[in-house]
Image 1 (cartoon, rainbow, N blue to C red):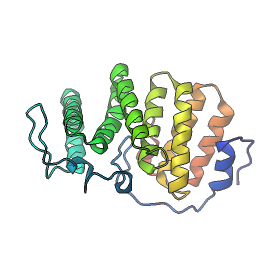
Image 2: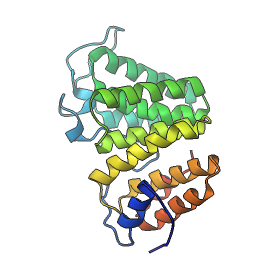
Image 3: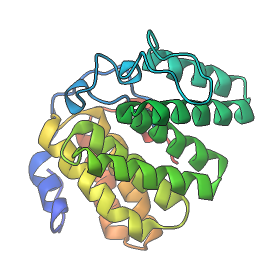
Amino acid sequence: EMQRSLVGSEMCIRDRFKPGGAAVPSDDRREGFMILEKEDWKEGACPAESQGKKSGSHGHEPLQNTSIHGIIEEFDRLLARDDKDAAAAYLETWLSRFEDTGDWAGQITILNEMMGFYRNTGEKEKGLSAVKKGLSLAGEHRLSETVSGGTTYLNAATTLKAFGRAAEAMPYYEQAFRAYGKNLDAGDYRFGGLFNNMALAYEDLGDFAKAEAYYGCLLYTSPSPRDYAAS
């Protein structure tokens, strides 16, 4: 095992993450992607289907038979066509629909997408607005110790870092670590994305010893290439 002088969560990493940790398979491995874990919400069989019979106040069609996976797939198709304006409008429309119906699970899913999207387009005000809303919903619905909450904290922290707020991001990275540590196997690929982004944040802060330690922890996870894309 790598020898390093670490404190707090760094000691936890040293003690817990060793080669051969079991990975939990998942189909949702692209960076920034998050669909709320089923056990983390109680409003229906699918986040996008909760409140499904209620139509929005802006004349949108009802949400029954709407799949959150389908929503994300359509968003991906817009990105593949490099139609960023349409992609942004699409996310904003769905966020509005979920707000109209009171579907907080759908809102969190879309807000996580917004964090990644606006981070990549460099739209600071919109990105930080998505962070604020996402963190508020995660707190309101007590997701801090869930995988879904951990992913929201990770996306929020990485967005803060991207917009020059690395110091502000660190507590959210730590919360993501605690949530993942409580629920995931040590080799789960999601730790890879977390450690990579924490290392980059520590680089921004000039703490190269901690950055090196977190890069070292990547050896103890089971990666997917897209997990470590710089954001």
